[in-house]
Figure (cartoon, helix red, strand yellow):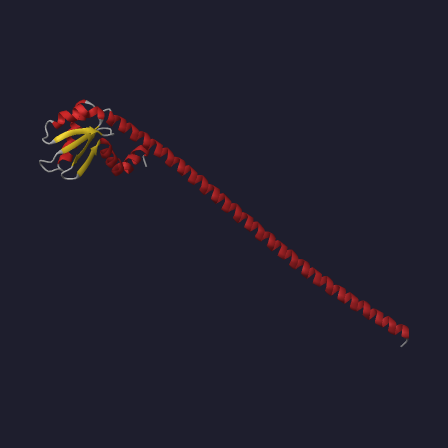
Length: 193
C-alpha cells in the first residue's frame, strides 16, 4: 500500500466522519429548532390564553361595575321618589283642617291619656296653629292643660311630672311608625316589583 493510498483512505474516512458529524449537528440543530419553535408556540398560546382571560376578566369587571352603578342610580331614584311621596303625605297631614284635624287630635290625645293616672296634672303640647283646637278639646279633660307649642305637623305630646311619662302622639310620630312598618309595601306599590 502506498502512502498516497493511505492518505487518501484517511482523507475519505475524515470526510465521511466530518459528513457524519455535520449530519448529526444538522439533526441536532433541527431538533433544537423544533423544540424552540414548539416552546415558542406554547408560550405564544399561553400568552394568548392569558390575554383572553384578562380581557374576559376586565369585561366582567366593567359589566359588574356598570350593573352596580345602574342599580345604585335606580335605588337613588327610588329613594328620591319615596322622599317626595313622604313630603306629600307630610304636607297633606299639615294641611288637614276642620273636623278631620279635630277628630285625629282627639283620638291621639285619648290614646295618650291612657298612660296617665286619674288626678295627674297633665301638660299637653301641640302645633302652634292648633293651640285653639287643643284648648277646646282639653275642656273635656280634668287636670289637662295646654302647655305650649311643639314643632310638629299636628297631634299632641302629653306629659306629667307625677307619673314621669311623656307620650309623643304627633302626626309625625304616627307617620314615622306607619312609614317604617309599610315601607316595603309602599315601595312595591310605587315600583310594582
